Length: 257
Image 1 (cartoon, rainbow, N blue to C red):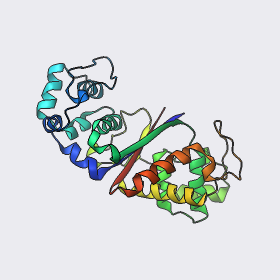
Image 2: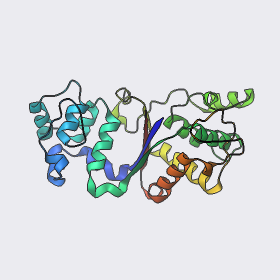
Image 3: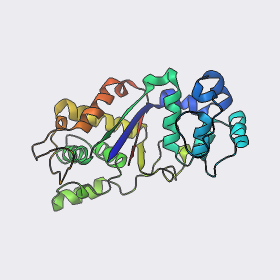
Image 4: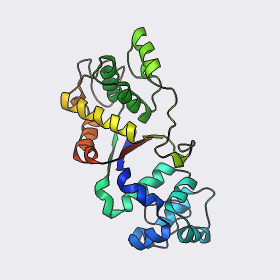
């Protein structure tokens, strides 16, 4: 399964969302922002107009897109988008002056080992419930037993700790149905992301164990496997240590297919 993780600093991007497109276009005069390519059938990453055409349903006319760019804000456009996380990601990648406030990676991997580390850390009291819930929400795991070998006591403990609903949005203005247009996705708000970042940092620094894994296809494992043995953990720790730990208001979202 292809996993995409994207971290960004809300301290830097919150002012961007509030901009009108007119002000954005004056400030960021890139080829992507200015090219008159509408891409009515698909979005190829080449133009802002193509992104708006792709993101909003029903597909707006060329006149409607130009009206959006004249009169609307970026926030309004995100609220109308049928794929809000994707649209946010595309806009963030085009703000060249803020390249150091967004980082991420895409890789083919499994999440079982990350969940194993979080569950074991919670059960052995190396990490609190905030870390467990952050890992569970970001990966849409309501039942860790689907991925891990748990006894009755462990299953009962985790049922209390892990909520069954993971819909709270990164931003309240995204609304309660913020994930409806995404194929497979979820994200964490600032408090949740801080808990996730702290978990990844400690697990990597101390090389926490990853026991109870039921099955993994892409990487070998045993009950003796530890955090640094897995490629996903290495990529997450690299992102966290290089940039995210120094940000004022970190957020993260994940998409997979």
